[in-house]
Image (cartoon, rainbow, N blue to C red; front, side):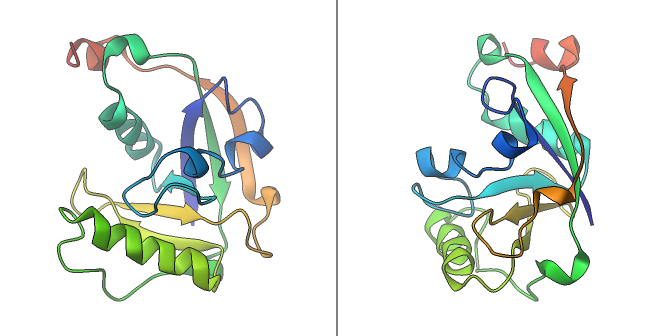
Length: 155
């Protein structure tokens, strides 16, 4: 499965930095609690961009970004048949689900729905998993800039 990641250029100058998972050590996400190595990717570059925009507080937080693409072997992606009830609105439930996957160490990747647009998917990566590989990264870093029209909407 091809996935995409957009990250601040200041912390993702290289493929290794972009896929280190260190951001998960500093802040929680929908599918993990603080203190865990995890990388969030998206099934399309546009969804990766939307995820960044959703988390920006104001347009002055726009800084240079880098984009990356990776090809994750399908047999290494856990694709659950169901997700916790109310995962969209109950962060403790979705975070427990992701934490359980990280702790179990069964696969290096987990397919999860995005709350931003129904029917689209993110893929979480566990960079500490023994089968995780930086060789999956097929493109990047490439400078990524947001269209000014999108930023105007955030004022």
